[in-house]
Amino acid sequence: MMALRNALLVGAALIATPLAAQEAQDPHAGHDMSQMQGMDGMDHSAHDMSATSADQADGTMQGMDHSAHGAQPASSDEVGTAPAPSVPTDHPADAFWDASRMARARADLSREGSFIGNALIADRLEYRAAKGLDGYAWQVMGWVGGDIDRLSFETEGEGAFGESLETGEVRAAWRHALDPWWNLELGARQDFAAGPDRTYAVVGIEGLAPYWFEIGAHAFISNKGDVHFRLEAEHDMRLTQRLILQPSVEIDAAAQDVPELGIGAGFEKVELGARLRYEVAREFAPYVGVHWERKLGQTARWARANGDGASAVSAVFGIRAWF
Image (cartoon, rainbow, N blue to C red; front, side, top):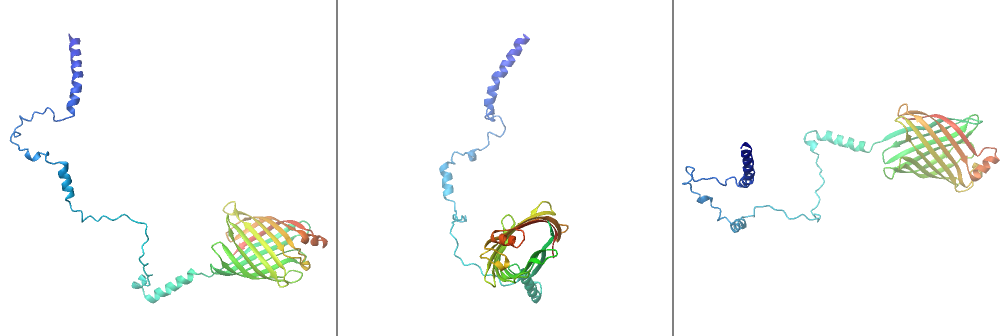
């Protein structure tokens, strides 16, 4: 009997479950409100929503005044034609500080904006250890001026100990910035090595090429009418914050034979170098390296005829400094 009773209870529960779910859809279904006190006398006339129709809602919205709504028209791509505002000529700071003092401050700012600076750079002061006869070389440059126009100067040369100076020159030029990376140079060059003197007019460009290559290309026209060309390039390869490898190349050429200088037409010589420097300070760096030079063409043939070699290689030890 007990088992039968339990089975009947389980069946009744299963039958009641869907009915309860249906009733849950309307939480007020089956609520008998007739027996609640006060419900009979309540007036529900105000709750009659049947009169509120979609047409009435539309009529209400149509009658609404939208004139106060500041809706903006769709923007256009047309550029306005109104004149630009005038450039302000007043100085607000004058309202708080003495006008004469502020005028002097603005003059100082204008002057400092077009600054006058200077630099002196000893790019190479080196000893060259070569087979047979050791030598020396230098390259010193500097400038004074602003960021657009500068007066630049440079001197360079080389020789062997116990012999006369092989090459030596000094240049002065006006340098004008063409853009942030390239400068135009116009100036003069004077040679002072052994042999016939030459004075040259100089025109060229120098600057910074992509990937931080420093490039210089110049043409030289002498007072004797001979024309020469020089292309120089170097690149700083920063191995560490203080250790820098600098490869360099120089190519010289002439437009004609100049027998008194031992220079033949065409490519005259090529120089290659690599210098590894250690910046003890940014302004001072000792270096070691190697330098190779090779005379070419008719220049090499004349050098051999005079008992000189056409090529030379040397180990270099020097310092680089700037002030």
